[in-house]
Image 1 (tube, helix red, strand yellow):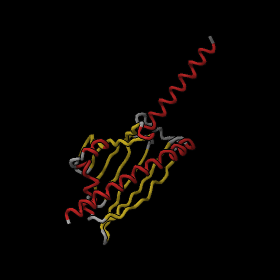
Image 2: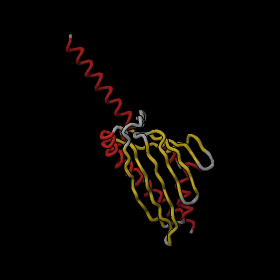
Image 3: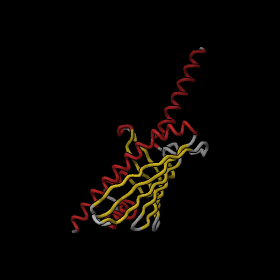
Image 4: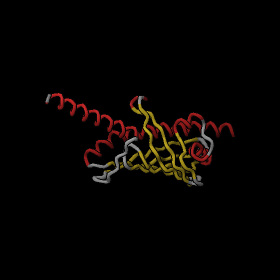
Length: 190
């Protein structure tokens, strides 16, 4: 009888740990306790885009301030919208596409040179990011910079080491897509 109780306790603990991990990874169970906060830089990462700065800005802002394409509606849902600030949910496949991480972020627009993101809910307690757009002779330079914060000292640093490469990979895919779409629009207009 004692071993049945022990087995039940181990099973419950394992189930709870698995559910907590899944909740943390997908952003459904955010953990922000503000104790032992560690931060790490994201980026910088830059891409040169053969398109005017206004076009690049519009490509980035369209899913938030304009009419999103069907593909973007599957990734971004605007929850609240103001004139220069939105609250948006972003969905990103994780675990080989078996899970979807949902983050909620504020997105602030400073036309045409800057877009700022601040995490409200996600797999880590704090992320701030910036897309800076500068005009160049050949088009636009888009520079990404950010900071990711985690709690609980070493455990948080380990979690940041797990999350940051995936976060930066998702941003890298976004930068590539923005560059391709902006160049397509610029060549069509020119």
